[in-house]
Length: 301
Ligand SMILES: NC(=O)c1ccc[n+]([C@@H]2O[C@H](COP(=O)([O-])OP(=O)(O)OC[C@H]3O[C@@H](n4cnc5c(N)ncnc54)[C@H](OP(=O)(O)O)[C@@H]3O)[C@@H](O)[C@H]2O)c1
Image (cartoon, protein in one colour):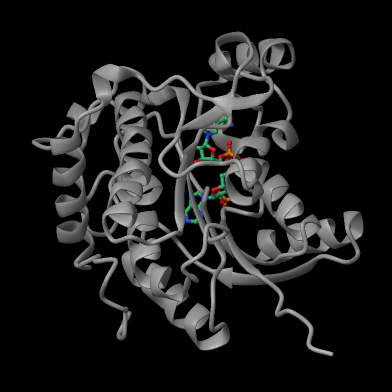
């Protein structure tokens, strides 16, 4: 009797918040989950906590710092040395910064971490994904994509951290959509599904000023939902046969902060296929990684 091989999922930022709950959901669905995290101590402690909740969970911890392209390449090498396939990639990790910061390559930190690191990771593992509708790449965007734009001439957005966060989350959405277009053009069945989680009191808001943070803590139980509920759009996109490639999903309740998963509002002012192509080219240039769906990655180093 032959048993099917266990399916493999990568969840970035799986040690906390929405990513943690996404890892729980994927493990509960029978996937072996690779928890791609930058802090190994936190990741091991999250792994232990998931196993307490779900003793059958099969989990591996692998190190990645998405803001550091050498680290993303190191992760890809280790992943490729350990696994021969990847079924689901959930590009979840993210930072929200209130001050101007850059990564080691001098690139705006939120753009580098939230978008470029995931672009590079996807490019380096894509060829391990079976050509199947159950193969999914999920990109986490945000309500903050609304009214944002990609500042191709100044990715720091003039040093405005909030604006740069919106830009980075719009980039995640545009990447998910452009990837879908390219998958379709190549006749591939893998689905690229962008989502947003609504709002939840995760670690994302830890950098807020003290005053804002306490205000947020008082209000959030009334208008936002739990991290487990915020993980539902990602789990729908990753697991549900009804989740369509290129469609943007999220919660449908009050201001899209919470509620049942459905089609999300996609700000039409930010839809621009030329900018999406330009973003892809810029991402290749800044990461130093060509990303063609037809060419297998033979040397991710
Ligand atoms: N919560 C919301 O209301 C909300 C709304 C819209 C969109 N989102 C999106 O949801 C996603 C998950 O965020 P969250 O709300 O769950 O926040 P969170 O609790 O702060 O979790 C973020 C995760 O990303 C990881 N991470 C941050 N920088 C990283 C890096 N350079 N390399 C690797 N991992 C890194 C964090 O690791 P550490 O623990 O080591 O920092 C953590 O595991 C993000 O993409 C965020 O933009 C959240």
